[in-house]
Amino acid sequence: MKVHKCIFERIISLENLFLAWEEFRRGKTARKDVQEFEWRLEQNIFSLYRDLLSREYKHGPYEGFMICDPKQRCIHKASVRDRVLHHAVFKILNPIFEPTFIAHSFSCREGKGTHKAVDSLERFLRKTSRNYTSRCFALKCDIHQFFASVDHAILLSILGRTMKDVDALWLLTEIVESFRTTEYTDNEPKGIPIGNLTSQLFANLYLNEFDQFMKQVLHVKQYVRYTDDFVMVAADKSDLEKLLPPMADFLREKLRLSLHPRKIILRKFDQGIDFLGYVILPHYRALRTRTKHRMFRKLHLRVVNFKAGSGSESSVESSLQSYLGVLSHADAHRLTEQLKNQYWFWMRD
Image (cartoon, rainbow, N blue to C red; front, side, top):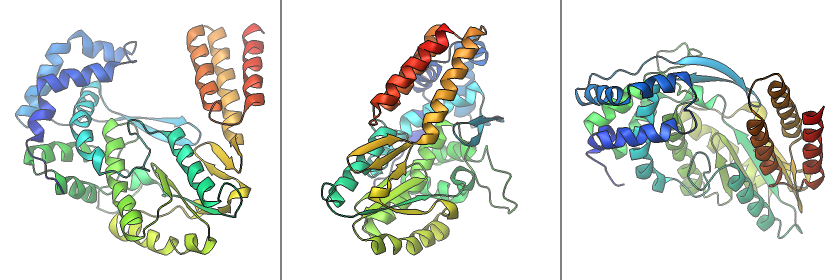
C-alpha cells in the first residue's frame, strides 16, 4: 500500500483554496450566502488559510433540512467557508484514493454514475443468462441507515493507513467529528452528513473495505455497488444465498454496519431486477413505476410554480430535458412521448 505524506500543505495552499472556491461556486452564484462570501472573497480565503496554517480552524455547525427524493432524507448543510474547504480536501484526496477503488463501484466517481451502474448490471445479467437463454438470479441488498452508521474511529483508521501526515489527519478528524448522528445512544461517535462533498469520498473509502472483501475473500465476480445499494448475479440461487452470512458478519464485525432486513431481495432475472430507478428484464429495461409517477408529479409542480411567478421557463425546460435523459436509458418511447405531450399541455393550460 502506497503511503502519502505532505498532504496538508497541498490541501491548504492558496492556489488549491481558490480553485476549490471556483468549483464550489459553480451553479450557486444566485444564493445569498455564496454572494456574501464572494463579496469579500480574498479576505475570506486568506482568513481560512491562516486558521488552517495555525491549526486554529474549527468546523462550524450544520443547518439541517428535509428533502423527499424519493424517500425522506435529512440533509445537513455546512457554511460556505466549510464547504469550500471540503472541495479543497476532495481535490487533493480523491486522486489519491480513486485508484484503490474497484471498477464496479459507481457512486460519486468521475466517469461512473447511476446509468453506468445499471449498464454494468445488465451486462452481468446477460452474460450469466447466456444471452437470455438460461436462468440466472440477482441478490440485491441495502445497508441499514448507512450514512448515520459510519463509525468515526473506523473511518479515521482507514484514512490513517494510507496517510502518514499528522496535520492532514488533524484536519480530517476535525471534519469527520464536526457531525454525529443523534440516533445512537452509545458513546461511540457515528455518522457522516448527507450533503458534504467529503462525505461522498468517505462513503466510498468506508465501503471499499467491503468491496475488497467481496472481491478478494468471497471472490464474487459479478458485483455492482452504488453507495449502499449493491447487487450480485449468479446462475445458481444457492450461490447467492451462501453469501449472506459472511457478508453480514463482515459488515457487523469490521464496519459496524448491518444489512437492511427488508431490503434483501433475491429474484429470478425474468421477474425483473429493480436497481437505481430501473427494472431490468430480458431484452427490456423499464423505468420503475414510482420513478415514473415522481417524474410527472415533480415536472407538473415546476410548471405550476413557474406560472405562479416562481422560477423561469428555461429552468422548467431544463427539468424536462433532464427527465427525458433519464427515459433515454430505458425502453420508454411511449412514455417519452407521453411526458412531452403532458408538458406542453400543462404549459398551455
